[in-house]
Image (cartoon, rainbow, N blue to C red; front, side):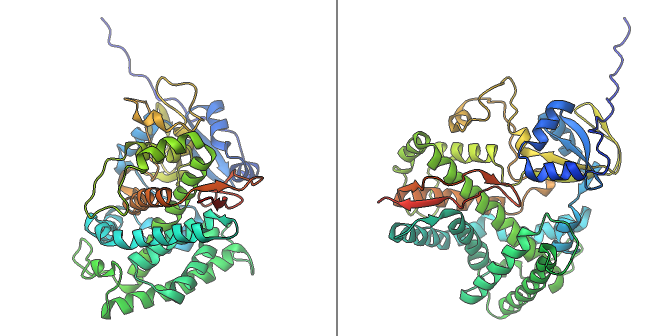
Length: 431
């Protein structure tokens, strides 16, 4: 009996785009950009965005093939992100340099650090609930969620206070809006303003580090004595760029997740009532070390992140040829893992995946593979802090407030830099 010959990998399908101008316009305007092309070309295909060849992948097989061979790819970001984060940032490093700095900065998100932060986060949730209940006019909940998430990372973790925190927030919003922009610093352009904001941010963060040496605040004392794997302390310039990344990792994704969570629940009152039954049985504020099970809340959070992951995709660049889901991807290709498109795939399920139905996550083997904060050795640094904030906000706010959506507002999502309701999610507290 002759052995069955091994199947050769298939060639990489291409959209045929040459300059990528039209593709780039579609990418930023069409929420279904990737899904439409996956349906046409398959789960691995190549296109061009403004002259940059990009391989898009989705689905469990392709993503597993990529993440199971970490040595075959490296981190990659668009030029605008690389410049705004800085050359020292661990996001722009690979190999041992990346691993060492990640280990140092990761101390700010350890289990011990999260326990330290929890009382202050609870106080911020209580303050927000009181503000919403006391407001005499409709409130833009997205703005409040962004300020809450920023307060956690800037005040609770970094120890900033008052005017310093407000000034940092204003510059950080300018910086964030240009992360995925055209990296040309024309006077008055978003990118030019972001570079100026970056300089001010780094100067303020240097001041934070200097003060922390004399009067440790927040969690920065956890970095004291932090050393890379060669046994050398990180320089202040190095640490400042890691703190800038930390602000983004611990803020933007959390603000997006909180906004999308509240938007989904307020648009689906039956699901909100289902979750409220569990919330009402939980203690608030939670006791220290309280690990009450929250299966319904966990299911709701998973469903929100399935439909609107805070990171729509993440990038890698191949260091050698790779076969992803049977397709040959050459060396030197930039890959975008399309999480949002992957989350609407499930083994054996062909419908219902566009619906908001948290109960699916309580069903055994639902066939879903979810990576809302990225995956592999470059998973989002702020993941654990984000999950803590989301749990505390959901329980604390839903226990203390009854919110209602203002009619006639645009609840569709702006996708850059992270998903967020376009009209700000206007709400009123009804008692």
